[in-house]
Length: 80
Image (cartoon, rainbow, N blue to C red; front, side):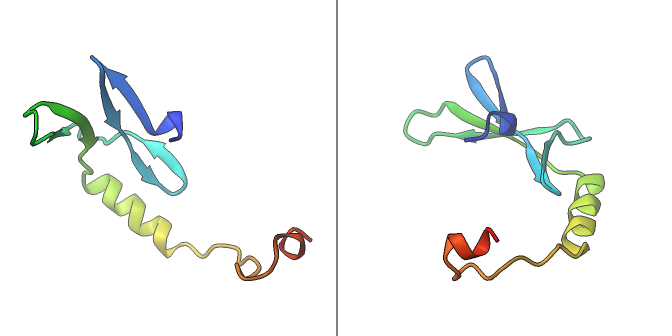
């Protein structure tokens, strides 16, 4: 797992949002607790996206990307 994807606070990972190729915190600064049903304890917290993050994600999804070679090509051919 990419270390930029989360911070650990009090032993619990706090996962960030992945928008437009970068890990970011929500402007709402709100977290959702995910509970382990076997123990009843929080095992991870995730960011809750706000309207600003949703708008950024939609804009990023609408942005054309540079097309690359097909994935079925051998890696030696793709790297040329």
